[in-house]
Image (cartoon, rainbow, N blue to C red; front, side, top):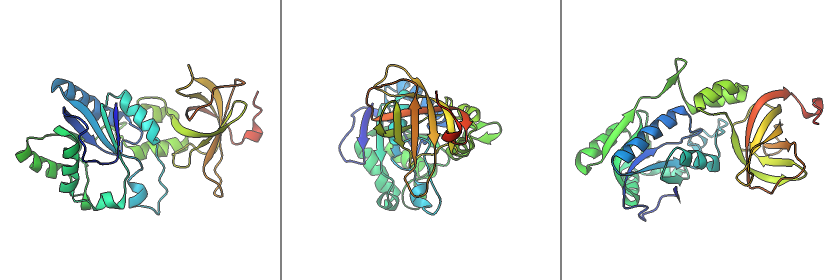
Amino acid sequence: MKYQRGLTHHRLSDSPVIIALGAFDGVHCGHQYLLSCGRKLADDHHALLAVLTFSSLPRMLLAPEEPSYALTSSVHKRQLLEGAGVDILIEVPFSKELMAMEASDFLQTVESMVTIDTWIGGRDLRFGRGGAGNCSFLEKRSEYTGMKTLFFERISASEEIVSSSRIRALVMSGAFSEVHALLGRPYSFMAPCLSSGRAVFLLDTSALCLPSDGVYGATVAAAEWRASVDAVLCLHHDDRLPSLCEVIVDVATLPAIDFLEVTPRIFLSPSKRDLLVQ
């Protein structure tokens, strides 16, 4: 997968692309359906599948008074999108400058980077100043540029719309089986490793949506390891400190890592002091 950080006027590919724009937080089953349709369309049209996403949640800037935590870090989302068959990933910081761009200027910049065969997305698509870049805007543009459009209704599960915000609420309540159903995979988070000792890892989870404080049975994995290992996850939020979590694995030594993926499985105890780790 080709990765581009930020908007640029340099061409990323001469091949036509099927492109989707969105936060893609969690890369849940609704996102996966969109991407699978995009992948099939790209294969049928001898094109590439591209995603333009954001390195931080737009709501962090749009509603700064409300706490905003992501289901997936940038590294984790990149891994999931590559696994979904994305060929080109453009990751853009969501900023005031980006919000102020006219929709036409934003689209022209994207068109200078790639040749858009088809723009795909949900019916709630918005971009550009005042959210002027919507489905109607793209459909009108397609009338004189040759760009095609394909828009989808949002996916439902258990009579409710599948959304990242719904999944965040379930994660915080520890409803892992429900989260699994909406993500299409077991819930996990990936965070940078700040330090490690004898099988103890300290992770920076300050920007991530996590379950409530407590001790959880978990498995952990890293690119540097051959397989996942069993672990104990300790979560404790302290307003005086960044949000950190401690991961204790059941082997003596492991290679140094940059990022650790943690999959909580079951709640064990409200506090590490209440649990004797063998």
